[in-house]
Image 1 (cartoon, rainbow, N blue to C red):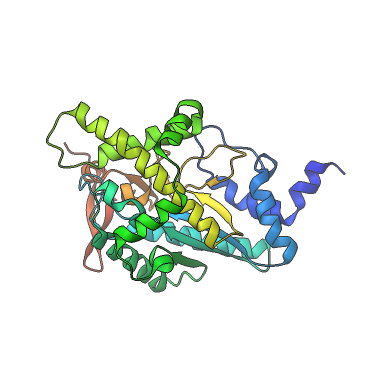
Image 2: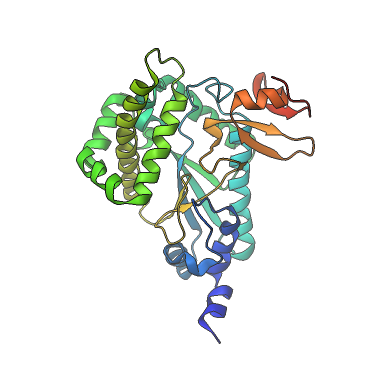
Length: 312
């Protein structure tokens, strides 16, 4: 038998095969498990031991501070659908691998909230509601992890300082990587774009805003790397997922939570528009408002329902 056939029928390949349709990548997705050897090896550690596969996903930090992009500072339909998708994915893994899977959402809002202009109180409220949403929806395969699990009741500035001092790369090292590594450069450009878009109250020139955001992008990446290192320390055996696009063969597996025309879109930077058939797409709130009417859930704005008549 060929090695390809053997790989295709292995339990780790079947598990990875359930993730592949949702691969978030900047280019063409790898056509099969063989193009993702890092994830196959990580999954195999669990399947060889007969233990549940553990995934870690840094993300779900807080809502964008730009009201033109999101409906508010609390989770809404975008998070609800994304969490449901992740829980269902773990359940499907249980259908091909009896010990199943669980996913740890590693909320990184406090790591860089001060850099992106989101108050720590909003980050806390977002994460508390995310946990409540997981309980209400009965999403039993999901767990959460944030700075409160690491440094307890210390103030947020102290927590950030401890994590970055222990794990963050220097700005000079990041600058060198942006110049020489295309994936790091793509991440830097994407984060810079988000920072520009998320700034809703800048009263200076566009060029001054872009300069400031290019500088802050280094801080976001440095702290994100520090958070990743901390996750690796606290969850040393896990399959690392990412909400950022990742090429086939990368150490992390980029995962798409919901459909969007933008490969970088996330529920915390957008709102949900449901079409008349029920399908959900992520887009800026301002765009969704032109295409649909606002739907409320539990007394809060939730998403938009397409009306079929675009205005404006």
